[in-house]
Image 1 (cartoon, rainbow, N blue to C red):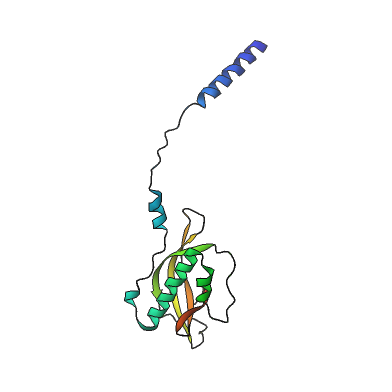
Image 2 (image 1 turned 45 degrees about the vertical axis):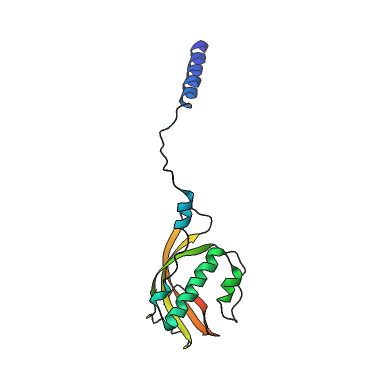
Length: 158
């Protein structure tokens, strides 16, 4: 009996070892790493399609997108009104594109008279995650300060 158990164990070990040598047929598509990096760079809004206050806000949105992408806290804080608290914490995501802007939105409650609302549909990417992207839309509120449009707030409702 002991001999049969011994032979069975050796056979089991040999079968297990031989199965470990098999290579699975996995085909990986080779991609150019530069191509993937380009795909996740921000796509800025075409400023030639806007004029007046809308152009100023589009320029501010493009600067905001660039500052987040580059993790440039100084540029990001320059887009905020003087009375806002400065951004110093680690950024978790950046915008890939602003796909649609709606300057006709009438938020409720109504913002102050000097604040211009715009709904922005966008795509974002979370830093350090290869494939993780999100699509969403939010209300951005801007105020003209010293001749430049400053980002006052971002809200999920309107």
